[in-house]
Image (cartoon, rainbow, N blue to C red; front, side, top):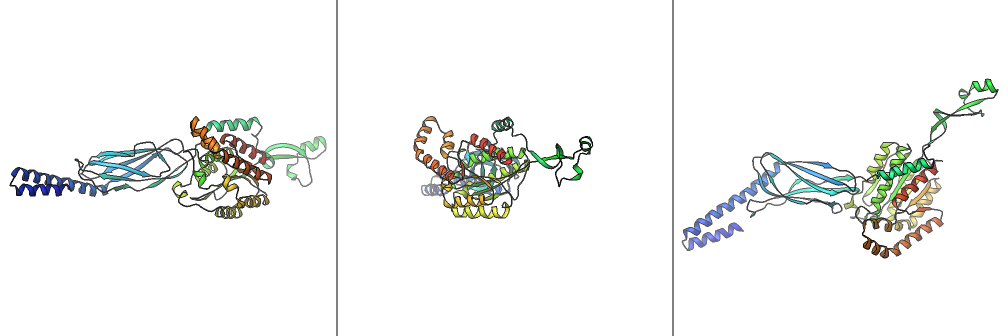
Length: 430
């Protein structure tokens, strides 16, 4: 457009035989051609750029810093470029998203962006740039410097709560995790019973007291725990960092850490609108804790709100996994869901099937009123309480209905729920 205007000015100067106007218009046309050529040349040079990515921060509620290192391998500098990055709308950016940047020839510059971490899988990118000439008259199309990629953010394990859990467990006698059986550690001596291994007879007692006694050895008492999460879209709605999904991730992460230290076996089935995530087998130790965190942090927010699975699909998926992988042994199952799902007929049928197989089932339902309110101011919290009063009453009715049918249902604050789960684990052990 600018060149067209200069051509019109040149024609005006020719018609009026004005040497000054002709000279100015020719100079401006030449300048426009140079500036436009620079933008085109810079656009071509950008294809030779190398971009690497570094990341710091991996847990929720902390800064997740993404640093792009942009290397210019050419002899052509980028005098004025506008960098900007696209990302998942469900991940909050706390730094400036656009930046004007100067990239010298044969150099490396850095562009960083900071997000407030939340549990799940989030898209970062693509990183784009628009090249402008020094006078800002011409600009290029959006050019992708780095394609989009995904980051996984893990739930934060609250160490203060974990220390409280360990103190609580020791205080009520939950530190012991051994039972009589085959093992290498001595437990006690008892009278001989028919069928006992003759190699375990204590002959010194027989010689001294004239009766047979055997050594009783000690073995670890390990149980198997299965976490099942049935997450609808409602699980991912709410105040940032305080959605039911994020709260449940912290609960399971803390419990999994405790179970790992107790050397119990654990596994997880996480069914969400973005996919189904589960461990192939029961694991124990620190590896089980890490694997649980990986699976529970696999929900992709953008896929979650694209399509909603039907409740029947949840039912079929869980039944297939349980029958194929977890149906042979007695398990302690913690089933996390929302009140709307818990009120469905298929849900009760699923629980009854699990009970028939001999499993211990505990339904854990996060009450939204207890989760969202923590992130609100006093006035907003009061308005929120009034608004959801009827919803809370409905949730309590669903809990009563489950309990009246012999199904144990629990709805507590996160800290209370963790303690309650630990109690259930230890009671199941003995």
